[in-house]
Image 1 (cartoon, one colour):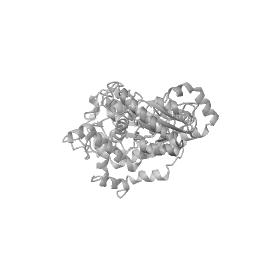
Image 2 (cartoon, one colour; image 1 turned 180 degrees about the vertical axis):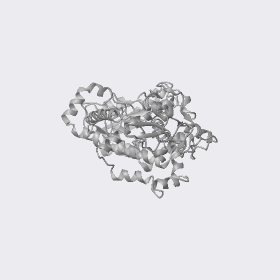
Image 3 (tube, rainbow, N blue to C red; image 1 turned 120 degrees about the vertical axis):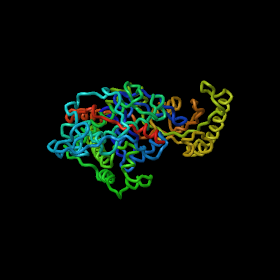
Image 4 (cartoon, rainbow, N blue to C red; image 1 turned 90 degrees about the vertical axis):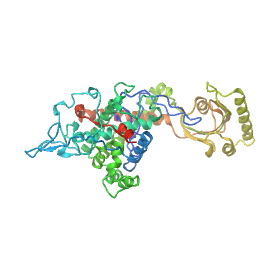
Amino acid sequence: MDLEHNENEELEVTPAEPEAAPEAEPETAPVPEAEPEEKPAEKKPGMSKGAKIAIFLAALALAAAIAACVLLITGRKDHPAETEAQQTEATEATDGTTETVADKTLEAGEEVTTTYGKAANLIDADNFGKNAVTDNASYTTGTAEAGDVQMRTVVARDATGYCLTNADLQIYYWMEFYQLMNNYGSYASMLGLDYTKALALQDAPSGGTWEQYFLTSAMNNFAEIRALYLAAQEAGYELPETDASSIEDVLDPEGSFAKSAADNGYDDVDAYLQLNFGKGVTTEIYHDYLLTYYTAVNYYKNVLYGESANALTDAEIEAYYDENAQSYIDQGVTKVNNVSVRHILIQPEGEKDSDGNYSDEAKAAAKAEAERILALWQADPTEDNFKTLALEYNQDPGSKDNGGLYEDFQPGKMVTEFNDWCFDESRQPGDCEIVETTHGYHIIYFIGQTETRAWFDTAKDDMASAAAGEKITELKTKYPVEFNFNNVVIYDLLSASVSAS
């Protein structure tokens, strides 16, 4: 998730959709309507598709949620099978220092911090910040074990001495993959993404390979999260107790996280995590990731975003909307309150033709039925009568069981004809008419406007997010991170899963 570009929603620490894609995001296919009359939310002007920083999954739910995603992709429950070839491990030199096949591990006097401590492998030190993700055609490895040389190798560092190893990077990287799959998994093939083969062998729509795409996103995500984490530490910010307890539970062999792993048939938590992030990841590494992420999330939500939002006045928010009114209107965010309605959908019978239209005969019959039901309502023109009729006749599965109720929705959320009727300036409570859409004939009963002002909330969110985004940019400059892509390896979780299935 790129915090700088996902500027429009508070950070949350509850199970939610995964993170946003990197800056060079691929074009995505239009999302079809999910319900007969309801349209999906559209992107606001100037916002990336993740839009709001809300991907931070609760410690107790993360592995299960991602495991479900892996099951959809691979059809497997167990973690990838072991490969025969293994990375050469470090050997003891005669002088007592630890050497690797690539270089020496950290000397005793070097000031760096990693999940591996001084066992981290810092090589090619002069090249940090001097190469690019596109320099290598592939970073894929099929051999990775927790604690081996390639997982202990440092791939990023900041001015405080903190170093990110390949083992840490695996979590950031695969979280980006799950993010895209959760948001656009149904359209993966349209994006040119085949999750049955190595990502390094597939070209992304934005240029480069899918592996480079996800690695770029992981890099941006880590840099921003690290800057927020350091800012939080400098400010003396502490995690809420509930979040801190959830994170520490990950390390407890008798805790809820360990129980979840056991309930899902795993011998230990490491195996549970390695299904999702590759065989180089351990419980301690996951704990470090959660601690960094949650601290950054809460600091953003409660300080950077929260203080910016709280400082805004109603007059400032309304003025901002007015200044950008046309851009908002183009996205369906108009300056009216939300509304609530009830409706009864009568759909024509039979199949649609090649152009997506019902036959004239089917449409005429459906319209006649809608008119008959409207007449039944007119005999007792009350909301209670309409609800009763909706429970009996409504063919919309999304609202049939609640009497056709669509409550407190904002402009732009419904198909055009439905939306235009509901938000007509002349609309009054108790109005009831038949409206034709591509789904059939809707008998709509207008309950009235609500107190919710989506346009106001949207403008406020945009202003607060923009201010917070500027602060993040400043923090990234204050706490820069340098990568060395020469050292990066990415465990090929997809190919390993497919070959073992």
